[in-house]
Image (cartoon, rainbow, N blue to C red):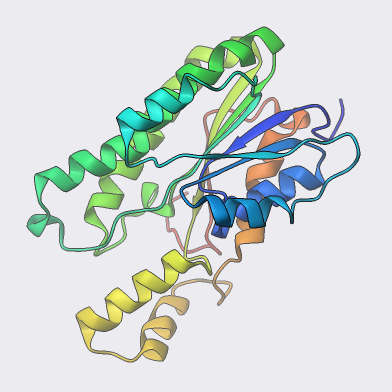
Length: 259
């Protein structure tokens, strides 16, 4: 069984930066033909030029905004390329106390994450079935295992995505398609910076104090890098990972107390 992704097409959400970009780059290094997906076309063009590419590989990009469901639905109708790998990845919502959150925020985040994931699966699943091979990996959050204080909306929706994925994994495995979730913990991205700054504002502590308070609960004593998370994502995309299905894989340095 080959351990590369040659001749495999990969659609990578949120891949202009952070974990999404690291995943796209790793998939390209493994031989996949990568489609970058994001909202900023100029950034996508710049990143496209940086992807690893052999003479046999073809990479491209698609401008999509996961917060605009109707617009995205119309864009999906124009896509004709068959994809065998779908990486569902989208930025999380701003933090806040859950009791104070507007109901509309829950609806918007539910749409951006779970509803859009469903639309993408329904678009690409037939071609995965025809190929007899497919990998769907959702990059969500360690909050699936252990809710994070101050991220109530995110905790709620991430768990919903995990439940959706587990159900889906049971239904489509017979076609040679696996569905798994990678759960990043505190990872050195722009999103982490937002979370840290929010904690600084909420507590009045310094940035260093906030970071140290988090790091003391991480056994490795370090924030993960996007590349470390991407390594887990891409492993689940390989043909050799065919028997790994329906799991939640934390990449959190041991932060979660869940088994």
